[in-house]
Image: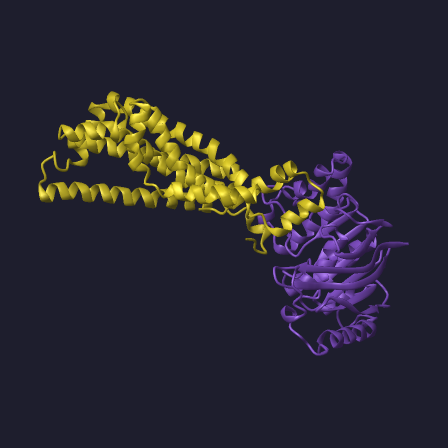
Length: 267
Length: 269
């Protein structure tokens, strides 16, 4: 973790900027190359646009349908975010309970593992039967998908307090609450964020899966509807937006991690 | 004045099948402001003994007293330091040092001054706002030492505090600890595997033997302080003599050595 160089900390800011530029530029370059390859393929194989549209056609579709896409984007984003937030609100208390109670760990934990083994996608049609076509079943789907990684990582984090930290806390006669707030919970945060980063990527998938089975709006619905009309270009536009949403949400969580857990190992 | 007294202290770890006698019938009196090192091979119960003095572990027989009172739980006037610094990575150096003050709800302003003095005393002036991961291992242990001293405990228990450091840093910190002990008089119990550390620092060296953990010998170290290391040291003779004796004791063959795990497999119930 540490080296013998406390003086090296304030490394030249110029070098830092360079490192950031490389970290941004290299992925961007890869992205550009991939788009180029896609374009080249559409030219070489001369696919009709209902099979594979060109990047330019997708771009035009995105700007033509901008208002429809934007409102559907918002719907899906909202479902994903609300589901994600709910999953955190349920999963973290569960993880605390599991980490603090051996009995709960023995009773609840195996059940959670078993429940997680159910393919969540298979439940999607049932959710529609139970909850209708509104946002409800989509949000529930997101919660179901996000819950597990958050519980696991948080419980692991809460149980990973090093022995010497636990002894330090005990030697200061901390109450259970003090011990939790000052030592165990902050110590678990890097682990919590591992779970959150997995979950946020799954959140968008959950929302789209929910929309596939019975929806009247959302980008998942746009994809299903454009499939029915053979409007491949619109489907591509929706997929691009979904990827964008996923990437943005992931980096938002990663940024939050940087702010809240600056001591965590850099990813 | 006796600071710590152990009377007939034993500790037995019970596993499903066997009882492991980690410590057996330890009698020891440690005087106020005395520096005692506990030396012994792995598994002789040094750390167990230290944890009982800290109130983290109850003896299965006998009594541990600190300041004339039986130890039943951790005490405010007893501080602990470990092989790993146990610094909180989300706190700055000064915040780490202030941690006991916050938890024990002591006067913050007065202790803040003391924390700064301690950091200066350990050569960490100017590092107050750094985070632990910006510091070297030796500096982290210095911060841990400041944290252990900030609320002015009367007893400092140290469990191989320098064992994870490189040899030079280790030597440097031993000398520094001696100097700090000169300024901040405390009763110190210091567990170590290092003969050099044990002789340099101790007023008395308690040599322990394993299986079960017992006190094999207590060696007083008469050399004047401050002691130093190296050929020019005036008291070399004394430290060398004690060091050699210690070496002999630690490498003595155990009488009829029986592996710990096979010893007296008393069944529970």
